[in-house]
Image 1 (cartoon, rainbow, N blue to C red):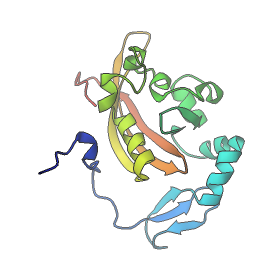
Image 2: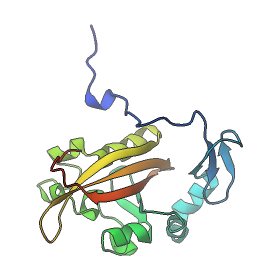
Image 3: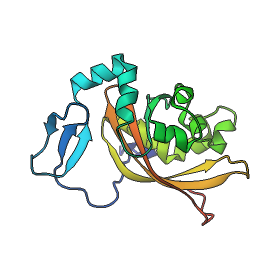
Length: 191
């Protein structure tokens, strides 16, 4: 009897060509984690720096503020455990007030106000942000430059925003990088 595949069994597609190998360096201590010394550089975090980050939250915030662009750190449920000041400024907030909030609440997702809230509405099943960090939390596989959309509340009413996200698991949490963030005027309204 043939097994039917569900959506969550399907592999996540990665847009564009990726280098065959990358040199992965710990962003904190600069230790080489994997790859060829002559390969393009990507950054990760080594086990000892993960322990430091897990037990010394001030150091995690300091680390996140060394990264260019908006960066969030979420747990498997999508609750923020850290962010950099660039991400906080993007959502007109401060780092301390973002901690403990769900991603949808942080980005003012219009759907997060529905019964059930962020992560529990019918719209959340197609959310590229949620699917990316859940995939990375579950498998440990990073997601690179995934197109994403949010239907965000603004003073002038909800607008579609488009951007790309990349994720990487750091121990028990997932680092989410956000790039772009332009308002989508196409009216497309899709994830």
